[in-house]
Image (tube, rainbow, N blue to C red; front, side, top):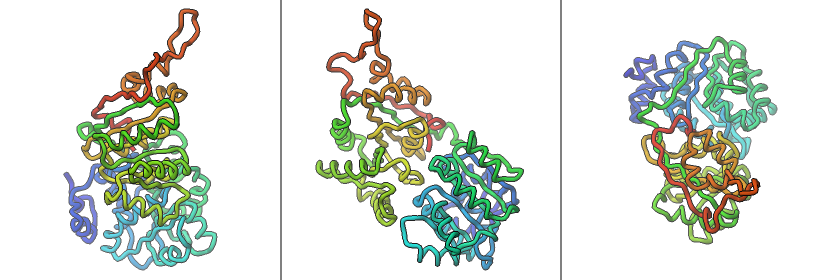
Length: 409
């Protein structure tokens, strides 16, 4: 295995990494660092949790020198991810004498403007960055390195117009590193538009390091009945750090209050919370002060918290990608995890389609198959397919090993 020095990384950065006990490059870092240092544009397909932040962060930092103003821009879909990127790169930036700053919404302009104007590297969400550009507080005319992290999620969140406007304000001769969980469809077209003669790299976790996730599908009679099931899951043997997904911001706050009424402590995270509130909630969850975080899909994007034992879809995911992004947050780094989805009767057919697409049809059919596929009665009409007293609250439990390719985040 190559060392960081073998990849061409400078001694100050190698030493800064070693001080953090980071001495061996992750596979994705081995794939891309040398090409990035050589000045190539890159298209990299790699999942969250693979070490991709340092894969683009190390060559970005090592290609810059102090005193040249803003020279590198990293775009991220959420404020949480932007903040995490800055935290991850801060030590190697200091080793090179560089300043790095985060720019995102939900906080005052003043401190961010001052930090951004001193920075050599800015990590930004598209909306707030455009605000600063419009105010004349920041210019991209000298950016020599552009990184788009989790580009597919930026598209999902509707940031394509803003991203295109931002990219258009950077010099055409810049170097571009494009990172995404997928490079197909609209994401692939965007990647082609933003890069020049890029080198392609695809990284997937080795088979023997795939996730060990137990996928469960629980039939519930009504929306109101979900709370009892959730309380049972949280007090059950799986316990541990649990991420609960809901559909709406109001639903997140309401669920936290209802859990507290049952003496189950939880915190909520969604877009209507201030940045300070979101950071405090995430910090409490990461430290283990509270073991239950209730979040919406958008708010949870960019969260990379270790040792999540259980993901619960309190509100069923709307599509395959949502299921993948949600449940893929457990079962990481060789740990076991569980993903539980509460399914109402009228959601069963849609959830069956998602399960089939992900290769989880056996787990689904074990409990909900008779609901999703109504039996034909003797007169040829479809009946409910549900026997009296069956289904409600029952679950399918089946642990699938080595399923990471289909359910990673």
